[in-house]
Image 1 (cartoon, rainbow, N blue to C red):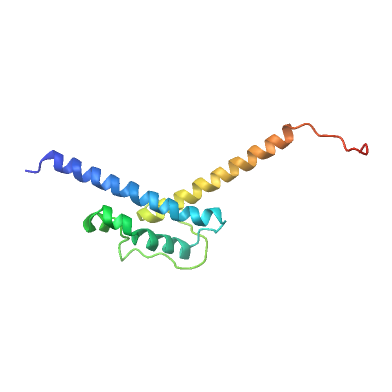
Image 2 (cartoon, rainbow, N blue to C red):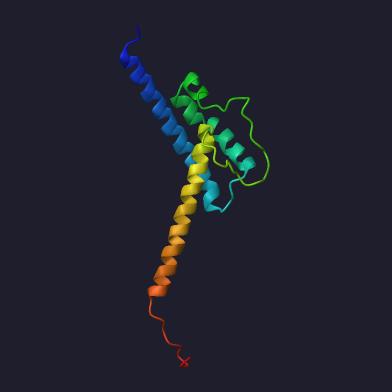
Length: 133
């Protein structure tokens, strides 16, 4: 019979690896987000490859744990420069989900900042022109 602490330890190890991978993916995605690079299928594959090849990740987690985050070979996605769209699907490989979330959050922040700056501009009193116009 398995000791319940073995299950708890495995769950904690998985959660730690997932958080680590998410942090790596967010950092990689941020490099593209700040440069205004749209999320395309080709970029998503590049982010996935870079994240899973991260030497720090490999040194902190064993191979079996990392294999849980590999995209199944039968699950293929386009490798084009078209924008990423999953439609209503919520069954995404972990790296894809982390990258899409990072881009969505950046888009929401940008929209909020834009709306906020427009509100501030409208709230400021208009100064008259020095020539009386």
